Length: 171
Image (cartoon, rainbow, N blue to C red; front, side, top):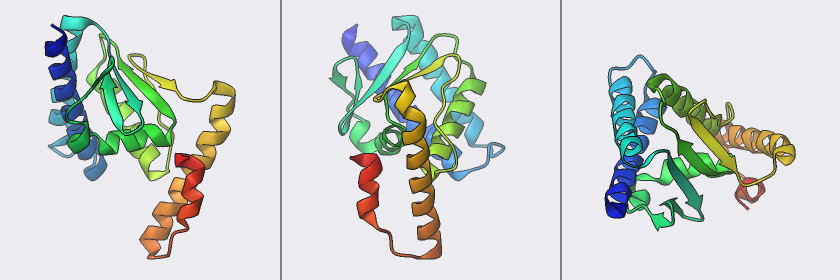
């Protein structure tokens, strides 16, 4: 049973990465976006039927389910880890009854966070746990969002980036 749920969590990670890539590269109306979100939802529903809520944690350079590293994290998890770390999230829990609309909103917030145009936000059935206390989070996230936005703008203009400032958000 434990190996089955770990395999399913790893499959969910791959489908999550695919859905995130679809949301990153295409508008929500593109024909590849909704099917990727539905595949993620289907995999989550399978996990929920087998084991209830599914939590994925970020620990340094690994993504974990329970205490087990997800094998696909090295090949598929990079964009997910980046979006979660920028927002100081150390655990995402996908609860039963999550809808495709909630997944879509969550993926949109991941894209916005990675681009520095918004903050990662939870939904009713996609819950976030943060590495820092709530009273510190707003200021830190605002600084992180502004810094990410500055980096994106500098890259778009072909400017040189002062990577020493990135230590503010990646430690």
